[in-house]
Length: 497
Ligand code: BES
Ligand code: MN
Ligand code: ZN
Image 1 (cartoon, rainbow, N blue to C red):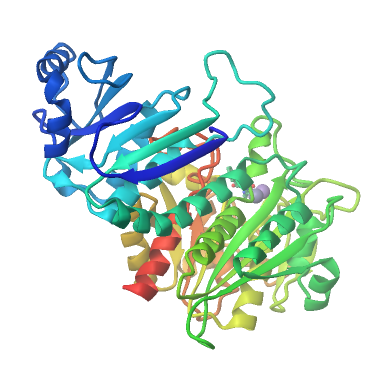
Image 2 (cartoon, helix red, strand yellow):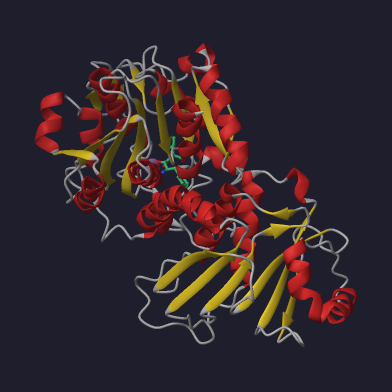
């Protein structure tokens, strides 16, 4: 990522730096684009023919120092038929465009125009969002760039559009979402020696400067509340467990809030039921649910959303140790229900059991949505395309499904039911923390459901989508920041439309 990336919005005029334009099937350009490209009309037609470029979605034509056009490079991004473009497509096009700007280039102009003409302000903002997300990389611990990967210190990207002031205004809102996604990615990408529960809590506390009320509960406070399930997970760690409660009150005074709860296992070794060494380093990302909640609260506060929202994250580190919890141990949750630990690697549900109950009891939220990298089994079921969605409320499912299709952060509903619930009944306690090999994601969700009572609730299992995703047009980094855009859209829909 360049040290400084600045977006501007200008009228259609002579482009500065690398020029990016969009092109629909059969080489159809918008009017301003056509005018600008007129001097190289013949050259462009020949280059397109030579490369068999026709403007199909997903194709790009790249011309270096194109003839009479006074730019170092012209990039033509094929978008197929723009007529049926959803917001998620606009974000993607912005990502594709940004991805084609060489990282050493200091200046680029993107013509925000399709064949049918200039884009509306909010569509320009969606393009800009895609460009911003694509430009992100996590280089904090690289002391020198690899050869050929040098980056310009300062990059200026101008979007040419018909109403620059309108686009600027729309971007001011959308930039808040970009900021939330990038914050979530940073948190997921940070290693666990840097981002342990205490440090995570400090970073969440910095939302205070945006007007978010942040409380940090330490071990003593959680002991008092009776959160033995959460505390049991962290008891083998040298780092103290924390519970962070964030409150953004932008809505009607006294109106019940909506609540978002995140699994924040800063590192998951598996504990005494230790994981194999292969790939264990990925478990620094086992706090991605919590990262998403922080990113979401950041976005809501930055754009001063007219909502009352709670964000609560349970922060622990799951380590093997002389003090660590054992298989066979029985813990009493804050709700009073007891859990027999069968496998100390099924720790996320133990953390969430206490946080869900706490939030439900203290805030009486309109609904609760929790996010967690909860099970490997959800990756087996859905891969990295969809997050698993478990819910006790059809209306919320419908809203999330819709928000998922709009943003591209898609969710797929999985079943719950008494037959699955039975699988976690225990010989010694009210329940056990694993239900055996079959239906692993579902039995995990069944345990969570035992802690939400009748409150409308959704559990999103994001083990597949939160990290290590196949590199996409809008993300080149390991942590994806998945869920921030989805939930931001849900909140917007719920309150403001
Ligand atoms: N954090 C893991 C789940 C996970 C796996 C997240 C891969 C991301 C990528 C979770 O705590 C876990 O270990 N789950 C176990 C549960 C089992 C012991 C019942 C699993 O999925 O194997
Ligand atoms: Mn685990
Ligand atoms: Zn875990």
